[in-house]
Length: 91
Image (cartoon, rainbow, N blue to C red; front, side):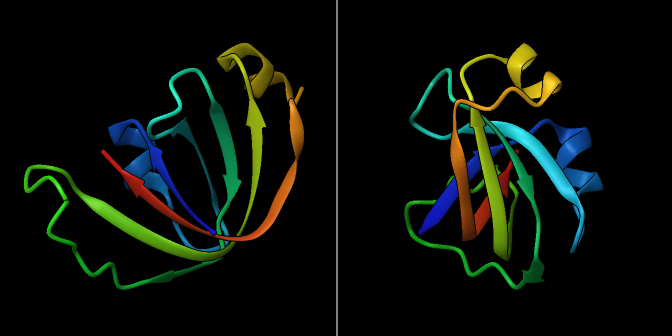
């Protein structure tokens, strides 16, 4: 499964292999995520990508979901972990 996560500029720039990122799921307004990132791979753009947006791709990520930023910050996740996901972060 591939998830696209909108991150702040600071989160986007700080993201690294075996690190983590906080953000929001694209197209799911109000679904916040915490992702433990795996290996970073080269992102190959698609014709649907916005040319003014930056993207990064990570594989083998564990993703956790929350309905509010407060729940996310407190580690109070709404759903079970999604293991081994591919994550595309963007800002």
